[in-house]
Length: 250
Image: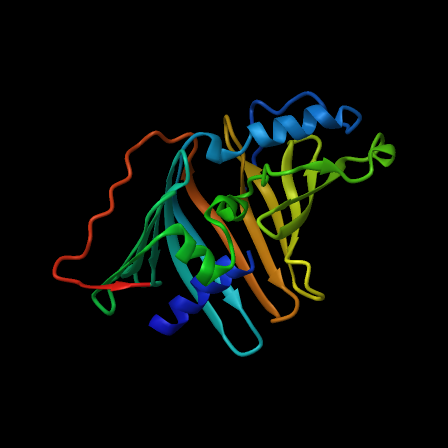
């Protein structure tokens, strides 16, 4: 079980609901694309705090299938507290991430793993600043419109950008002004990840209830369902190290 849990975490990070908002902008076409990009960035749930109280992850590959439950607390400025649990409800890992700290309670092996955000990026290939894309947020770095002359009658616009060697192409739904599709790559041939978001829900800020992450090279597909959440959320994040756990650098 521990190896499967590690695999699903690394896979999510490496290859990285049906109601609608009451505050959807009245713009339902894409002619004012600058405003739509601005709104999409401002609609990121990481602009405030959020609490995914219950979520589910299903990983499918050619050889196995793994399911886990999770919760995520996020406070502004890249502070995450992530809990991963088995189907029986037993917590396996608790992960704290900030701009200068990475801590992991490995409850199975009774270890406290510690490091820095650079270690997170070294292990997963994803900067902490880009972790937001898993929750449906637009990566707001070096954005530009892909083809402004072809967007007037479409329901979505195509955007390009890059950050720390990662290139991305994304599509923004002009009605919801949220990202519904993202392709990220490192520039290497065949190395790309496809992320799709569906069923946006929320009163003030929208979150996709269903997110699909697909790695066509490794043939790994991850389905994420955000089943219960609070947005915005303004609570505190507290990481309690495991008592008498052995400390080890990641």
